Image 1 (cartoon, one colour):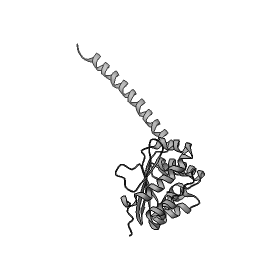
Image 2 (cartoon, helix red, strand yellow; image 1 turned 30 degrees about the horizontal axis):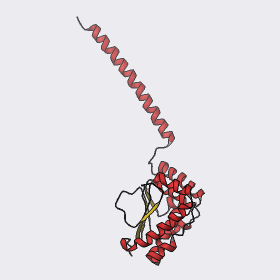
Image 3 (cartoon, one colour; image 1 turned 30 degrees about the vertical axis):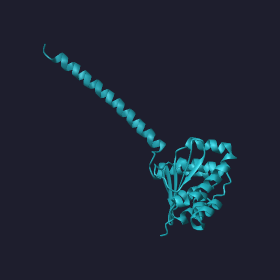
Image 4 (cartoon, one colour; image 1 turned 90 degrees about the vertical axis):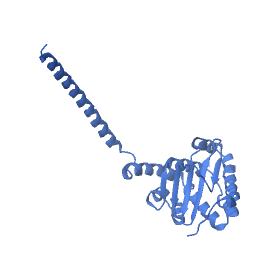
Length: 215
């Protein structure tokens, strides 16, 4: 397995890509505003073969940050091989490819969806600055990962949100279905009513015993 590390040696390449992204963001004020509410959320794009990871997050002012190393908590992690990311980028239905393919999504999916919606409206050339700063192999791999994560149609983004919700509810059982919740609430209500009736019966029995007790 070939490892592609990103310490200080590659800072210039990431900085160039970051500058290109922020230049495009400055031309789209509504995109900057859309990034502000998700400031601090960290998205990790992790390729396992070859081993390469990129971290993205926005500042409170809406500026984007790209890092090769991050020591803090990760909000959302997208993991897969280079082939998995390539298949995701080329898929006609990226939402289905993300759910059913080799890509693994961990953490809060809304971070990925919110960033995708921002970058979908921008025309960012990720590959040129990354290749110039990191070389052909690492630059191309990173650009492909960014393209797979963000360059979808708006319809695909909406479809992703819907499929993730359905996946969490029906397959992963992370969230209970609405009907199951309704049945649960009904059972709780019935149990509460039975408890109240039992308490009333116990109280009546207690009062009868008090009356029968010799003075």
